[in-house]
Image 1: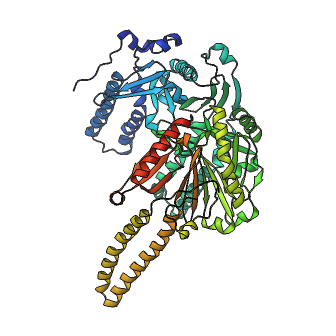
Image 2: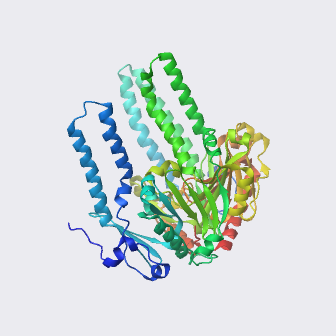
Image 3: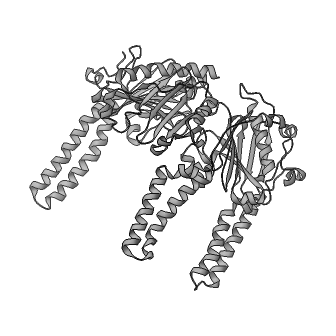
Length: 458
Length: 173
């Protein structure tokens, strides 16, 4: 099988000219390559771990033979050659409002992303990419399947930022109610900072959540075992657990450090990260749900977390744990900051006002005091949670389906719940444990309210 | 109210919220037969094998085990009848309602405009009885709406009708 060679004009393939101007971008359908250093970045993680192996094993194990070293070097070499070939056969193009991404040597893979379908555009920089001044551009499309997302890895940081602005501008043109010009320097100046996380508060906040409690338990268990046994060797079986806990805490810190939210004309821009930095833009009207989370310990301190759900999964495999959580607009902040952000995300959101009937305590003894809901003609808000109070706002126009559910205990107590599902796997607002008649009334009115909201939005 | 199988016993199977203006449609009565065959296909071999294994100890034990398995199958059959009877669907102007469940009761409302795709599946047993299961998918993973035990022709007609309605009312994400 012969390697398909990119057919684009050679001058358009030069990485130095990877991003043309917007005027050229809309009409110019030439093919572009990624940055030639991309294979190095994409193999970055593997190289780091191999360096650790190369350096670490001879130190730990004196019997390291030359054969293993040759194998390791061969693996690195193969990875680099593979990455180079992959770079050689990867090209992208923007034409007619569609981003095309062709890749693959033996099995050609050609993807098309209609820009009007793009939910968000992220610029992600891993540690290796930051050293080289590169960045990865990720396109998020609806559907929840990470494999369907687009990923340009890597471009120069400035190019990635510029391309992101241009993609968002292109994507915004067909969308209703959004003025389309590309954000120039003037638009940048009008951007307002909505929130900036306090670096001193973040580590404490992470330690005060469930992950922190687990870490404490593991630490105590380890210390106690060592105390009883008297020798440090018994730690060995604990090591994987300890590493897992540390990795979880680290991922949270790395992902949320320095979170800055800026309201810009093309959407809400979110930047965060310690080693790996992420910059994403959430287009207005693409937010499926907003959730305010208040863990037990945080409530004492008046802290909370505000998360937004945007349709479309995060792309990178290693971010899967992160993807389960929603994107935290406020990793930790005060209620005042959260209220400010809420007002920015939603026009006059309703506050939960209708608590659940007292008899719901028999069904939900740990959470009945939180259960509450409210709705107006644009949003539904529902509160639930046992230790950790979760308040979820869902725009009625985004509701995909409404489900009425009644379990055996609820039936005995004359209660029922109503679920409002939005796109994706992660979120649904649950109006839990309402009086049976009230639940029936909710089920009777919400579909009509949602229909009116949908037709008003489109 | 339209009640294709017309049995008053089945009407009482649903006690959730109801809309008097809505006429509930029901899966084919053959669905109950399909479920019964499934239960029998599971019960009979287990009863025989259990009985034979018990025979090794004594004849009484063998008979007791076989009888217990058959009894469990009969109990499951009684539960099945109620479960099958609880299924129902109703086409309203803007959305489809699907209800199901005996122990945990569920009623889903899916707007036509939110349906991403609709598929029809039929296993070997369902095919033999001329049945099919209709599934509606929205962008939300949680809204799992399906209607089992539709006659194949009904399922195909319903699919086409829902698809047409969905196209007419489609809304962006």
